[in-house]
Image (tube, rainbow, N blue to C red):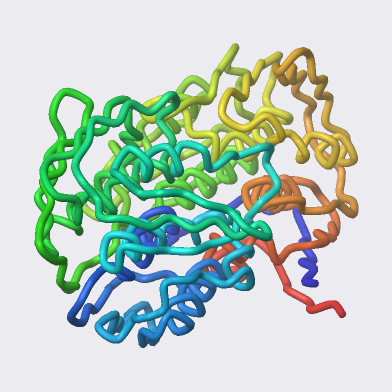
Length: 417
């Protein structure tokens, strides 16, 4: 277990180099299971979830190394078609290894994936997609097996699931004929996967909000530079707004964080774009924003809802946040209340009456993004705060303590037994 000690009350000023996107690199690493050849991935973040993906690749028989943001991957020798419960249970994205293994070898066995506890998060859309492509599904002792020769199909998703879209897209690259995914995830990270698969020999097109995938004989891993992490950028932008600071976010484009920019301008912040990234200049205290609802892209991302809720807890006035993606993405609410926030949950809505300042205290991180919210809240609160279970934060934020210190915050990581 890890704990972070935060001494808050300082405005965040300076530059932040935004790391490679967690939600882009993980499905690309998963897709490697279906590829031959060798790849070099640049801008690969040093985060826990990447380390878990590396464990899985090695277990499957592949080789991978990561040094100074450069991952060298050799999937050529992958030959095992079963994803182990550990490390597979450590993160949700472990399931994206299934599409490549199923397509390449005609069989894959896996356990239900793990990750943050955000609600039911069923894998039925993944299973439905594999079945539509011709795979037979069986289950024994909680292990699911999919096997069969894949054929193209028309697949309409009941919800634009990011993971299901990506998994089906990868598997469909190996299917005979053409696959059409209707109502897919259109997140930038999904399009990033599409771009990479096409570089590796895939034939995927986006047409009027759907993906059309023509099967190919094989995919060969190629070099690629991972896009910057819009969720990390949004987290720091909301932190700047909470502390009345000014940050230059290097390596991100304004259109990649457009929904966050819209909210922060409503809150009174000034946002500009230059050649190197996005600059946010906050007011002394943000304004309330009225009502905001999370949803699939291009709506406000659920992965920034906890951080937004934290920011609104110190905004002048009343705001309402509605979470529509994960029914249990509310565990940060009780922790914010410990720091003095005035938040009430009413039928899926968070009603936030902003207070002038949060107080310091001891809080618990229950998941990755909730942990990031508590970190930003602690930086805004005067005095010393302690964040327990801080290891959740390291799943998606690279060198977070150093980045905070570089912009005037005070953060220290301590390991706990």
